[in-house]
Length: 466
Image (tube, rainbow, N blue to C red; front, side, top):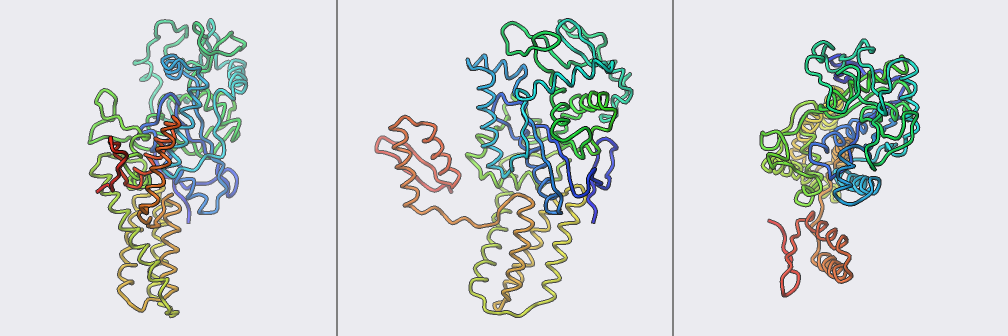
């Protein structure tokens, strides 16, 4: 059974054929680390973590790379505002990113390259483009000659003439053509910079991913992925500069996830509907957030609001209750008989799951299979003399599918009062020691378990969230 991927480059579903048998080279554009990630930033890591898991489930050896942009204009501005050095601020938000996405069930990439650690590779890449006549230095800047790359626009399906109509040369830019884009920026004032053949400066945004994908995965990779907003100009420019240097296809498949809206409106700071994951997972179970994200096909836009999140929580809870009931019955069952009809039904549902995921990783249909499985399991549980083998098989397939989706169907028991009191005491001690970060961690840990703390003059009181 073959896996089909919708390729942004060709605008059609194509059968996945890896460069090397049973191996997948996959590069996913990561965040620019100047703040906590918002809910839109969280969709690509969740989506492509699931894609990775499914490839592994199907027996592929996946080399998964996801970068960090740890120096650019926004980071420099944020570091200046916080009176921090750029590397320190970037490191702080890299660790915050790991904390947030780990809570969402996202596994770390095999490699997480950073711009600050790959400067020589980036400079060498730019030098190669200049030598081949695809780039030029202008003052302390270096620009890519966009018109020299004849296939420019092939990913976003735009003609270079149409692009030229909207292109402008900004004040301070020294480029020869409005369509040319920056590979290297001359340093301004005392901002962070590196020595280069063109003077002190730092990389443009697009060049970093090309250099790091080449270093960690080679000149041609299987899959390049990211949010829909990266299609143009970021990924378009990556193709141009990489294929100009190597003369080879950069990526065989381009995958892009859709946008997220908040209450049917585009998410933006100006509208005040900007949702940070760091805050969201204090109020909602991170596993519910992941389940919600996967309930819509990754290429479709997704609307985010509390009502839809509550529906996802309710749905996930129903699946967990079914799993809990299966486990409870299994512990007390003594029947060893087989039921071939039910086993066939379970086998068909597993096949339905594989079919859904083979069809461009359709997690929405895969989740529908989970609910179909739960319905069949609940019908079977009406049989008081249920078979240990059937119960075990139901549970095994539940766990198999849930693992690919990166969720757990184990039903967590409520925290005991003694556990809550112990954590509250630890929080009190942390506050006395002025270890406020640890105190906040404990508060958030309890909140995730639906325990609300209230600091009163008489001490800390707690209650379970309704």
